Length: 257
Length: 203
Image (cartoon, rainbow over all chains, first blue to last red; front, side, top):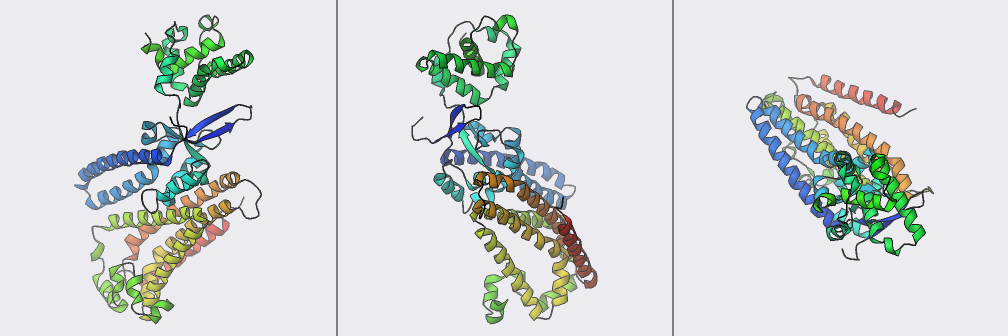
């Protein structure tokens, strides 16, 4: 990843700071193209179904087709960003996520506002207004993002290569608990996983005290997600716990063996 | 309207549909003789097109609030000019009753709806500009969002209603539907909407 990518620093009330990488207008446009293709596919499928229905009531079928197309074009982004925590199929494929400017999960009203305001960002063609605004904005926001207090970030800045190197190929006692491990994998937020990866990468550069504190907090965050049985965790240090959790989160526990 | 009175050529530029280029009196005679035939079998389609188009226009007017309100005002003005041009044309031709009967049943709901869209746009714009408000822009936008969404939802519902009325009622003229009934219906809708808007939003 180039150094020219823009990031935004988030400071939580608990005194934790972390940085998120903002998605560039170009990547976001590509995600939109993918979404447009998905939406076109859905539209075509709906038309086919309504065509069959049209054999019985041509006028009603045509009306439903118009309404369905409209609802899809307005509701596509709202539905997915609401159900998939700030992601649409296009954003998911390109590993982007819409979130609150404070790094929080999108609220329903934010999802609605940022999607309804596409009407101005898409002007005059191909989201030129939105793209220009994003270039000028400190947080790479289009007008809909400004109105909704949202931004779009790239997920898990650690590349696959970095993560592969983290795999210890040591015995992972947490991974032995298959159901719990899967649960952890499904529930872990990409932000937490990315943070843990960075902590592991930079562990040698931390002072011993900071290292203990950082891994203690991260281990607590992972423990809060899934409760593993005492006999598995009691012999693990916080750092080992985090390493094991990260291996599970990125599916390295299986690849290593 | 003044432009139309001054320059007959302006009509060609201003009129949104080909049907409006004709002589109003001729059109009225034509419409009245047709009775119900013209839209038979396509009314649902026509209705769906009207409501989706109108909701799109209204949402665009709303979203234009992010241009510090300038875009919203321009769109409202543009729509007003077209409507004024059509109305002026018919009034000059002495067809006021036809005009009212034609436009009021759906217009008394549709026009307020787009005005509401413009209002929502201006709510956004005032939060964006934040004149005389010392809170941060993010907080102002956050505070405005519920109002904007409520107005947008309300306007969309009104436009669904207007779309149904326009396709199924407005296009019937005397002698099928007497003008007095159509105008009375439109006035009633307008009154109901006015009462609702005057009372809504109070806590």
